[in-house]
Every structure is written in C-alpha cells, then in structure tokens.
Length: 118
Image 1 (tube, rainbow, N blue to C red):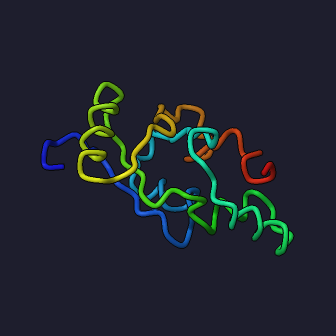
Image 2 (tube, rainbow, N blue to C red; image 1 turned 90 degrees about the horizontal axis):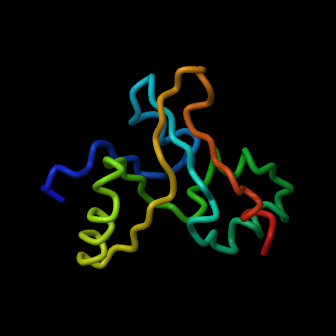
Image 3 (cartoon, one colour; image 1 turned 30 degrees about the vertical axis):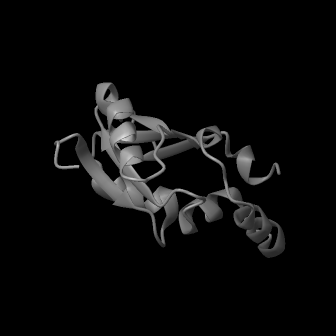
C-alpha cells in the first residue's frame, strides 16, 4: 500500500470502533459508518444477549467484525479495496468522513440493528 492512498489507519482492538477511530482523525473530522455494509459475526450478538450489553457498550469494546479501518479519499476507495483484495484481504467501504462543524460524536454508526437482528 505504498501508493499513498491511505490517509489514516485505525487498528480496531480494545476500545472498539467508537474509541479507536477518533484517535486517527483530526479534530474537525468525524466518521459516519453504516453497519449494514458488513456482516457482524454471530459471536457479538451472543455476547450482547448473554451479557445483557447495550449496543453502545459493544461498539465501544469490540471490533464487531472490523479489524482495521483505513481512511482514504472517496475517489480512491474502490481502487484501495481492489488493491487490498489483490493482496488477499477482504476490504469494503463501510462509511465516510465528514466535517464535524457541529461538534457531534467523532464516530456515528447507523443500522446498529445488525447487532440485535440475526
């Protein structure tokens, strides 16, 4: 990936999507993710049920099936996904970055029903 397409990268470990992504974004930028764009592994639904966890707690703790988030220019997204696919990685566009003029949460995730619907 030496082509310069990647602007930022977040390894989604402890802290989940909600805490790891903000660490790589400038203050004025926020991420908007769409959970319907990836398959959430069943283990996370099971953990929610058994542990009686809230969705926000799951998103703040686990990677919910996303191990790495790369930030690229919108026009480079498909090319980046193809290059990663050529390397044997599964890559997909799961959201976008926008300006954070209203000082909202740094990460917003829609379609979180993926965690409760099986």
